[in-house]
Length: 325
Image: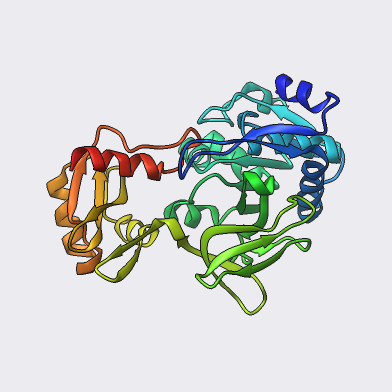
């Protein structure tokens, strides 16, 4: 954190951040400190955080999520507790000395999953007043378990360009929903292709056209269908990669990822990478997927490609297929 604080306290009006690299190589960009403060204020206001509340920093400040936890602490006067960015952030002696549970924490799904497996860590997780989860999709089984938590658990929607999230979706309690609620300062719309358009002038100078295909509710909330660049156009049929992965999730016992390759006849075809048996993967797909969703190729890999932040590395997956088929 010290390196980031040095950068924050220097004379420049900007901070350098890098994107996660989920759809390609990570990119570096400069963002305005004043907009980071705006983002921090909006989140703290939405969650009702006040000076003196405790906040857990358990993610690397190399990325926007970690940087923004520090900025929220600065903007709102939160008491920031820093622990190493490990897979088990709640397994730390600092936390056992706290007189009251944490007010606020931000984690990636992997950290939450690991914490749920250890009774003592799970109990600490339960006691966090506001837990936000971002940086990747939340598994259905995990979401079902979090739904019973006594305090507020949120899934976030955002990106580096929006300086962390611009919308939250409640996971826990009677207010749990599949719909994201944008912050009041954010205006949303869609392109003709159904992609989300974000107008959030307090955190981003430009209107952002995302690759996320969404549907809107009558009240202005939204739900993510998938990414535009994760559509496979096969024989005139558009196949959403995330939807195929969701259909396979209850049946695949080993890590896998859906990708695509060029095909002379169909234009593009579905390909599955798996860390397990390709024969077993094929049998599962034939049993549980519609005919036009079934992969044309099955490729065994030692490890499914992921980004530094644990997201599926889609471009790397396509590159693997290009080399192996």
